[in-house]
Length: 130
Image (cartoon, rainbow, N blue to C red; front, side, top):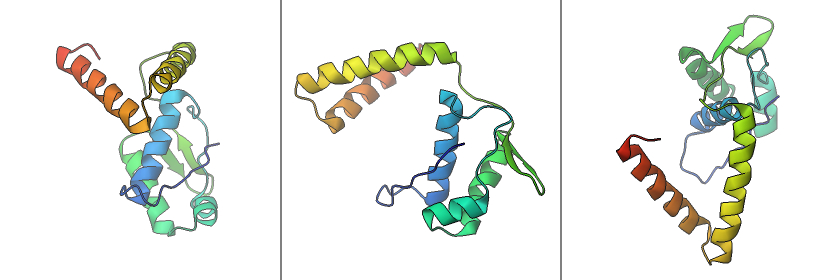
């Protein structure tokens, strides 16, 4: 089951942070079709947020066809997202960790690495490759 975390200083609304975390878990295979999301009550207690915030996030995920609510049972993952197989994720993750190590050794900090990665990704998107 997913465990939500909030970055209250990020400037991203709380409900969107929940939506993004579910989508990331779906992409990475942490959540799979049939898995149950925490109840709104569980999320409210863990994060000390308004129940309507959780319900708004779950409604957004349901609108996108990613989850479905079952009255009295909870909210369940309907489908996954992402193109790569989970085995590919592990290899790519390992490659990225090595890249981060090399970037750190070269003197780059987190912001530098994020900027470099974003630039590389944007270039590939312009070429229609990514």
